[in-house]
Amino acid sequence: MRICCLSDLHGNLIQVPDCDLLILAGDLCRNHRDYLWYSRSFKSWIDYNANKCKIVGVAGNHDFIFQNNPHEVPDMNWTYLQDSGTKWNGLNIWGSPWQKRFCDWAFNADEDDMKNRWELIPKDTDILVLHGPPYGYGDKTSEENVGSPSLLEKIKEIKPKLVVAGHIHSGYGIYDIEGTVFVNAALVDERYVLANKPIIIEI
Image 1 (tube, rainbow, N blue to C red):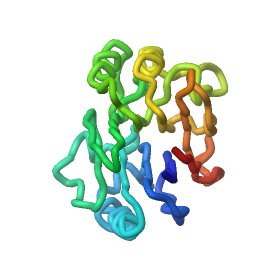
Image 2 (image 1 turned 135 degrees about the vertical axis):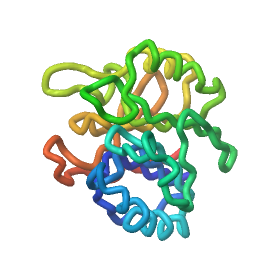
Image 3 (image 1 turned 90 degrees about the vertical axis):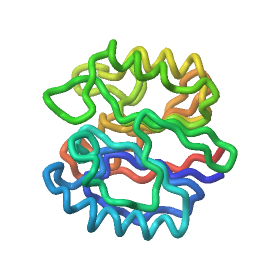
Image 4 (image 1 turned 90 degrees about the horizontal axis):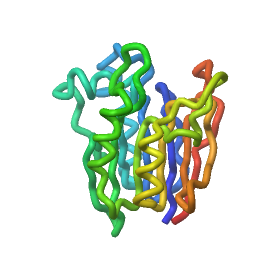
């Protein structure tokens, strides 16, 4: 199975490589105040790609519409996950948009709250779709690691096949967490310039 991993598009609706499953790990929008963008540009892009592959995604800290005005999110041909799961092609997929608190962005939470949310993740999860990364993997800023320690422990406990996140643009890449493939699929760099390629994983 060919999986395309994308995160932190920030409005860059790129051409998606051939894949069976497209995973979107948040920060989709060009401008977090432009709700019309989701019902026009993003919906068209989703509906176009849904003719070629299954699409599963979560929101990110820039995607305020999903937190503050979920009733305004347009109907699209994808599976949106928010502390929820889906099953597709024999795979159990769980998604969560939360990340450690920073300023006043969407889906921010303190570590204790996030630990409680990670407890919702089923033990038989095969693919985990997140926005924020676990501590020590794809989470290094210029100063420190900013991922969630409790998320790292949860990943080690349940050992999913694949975990996809983003959020920390400088953390782009593929990592190994005790046999679990972890992908930080951020497309843009720290200046929000399109800099990275989609990451393809075969499972």
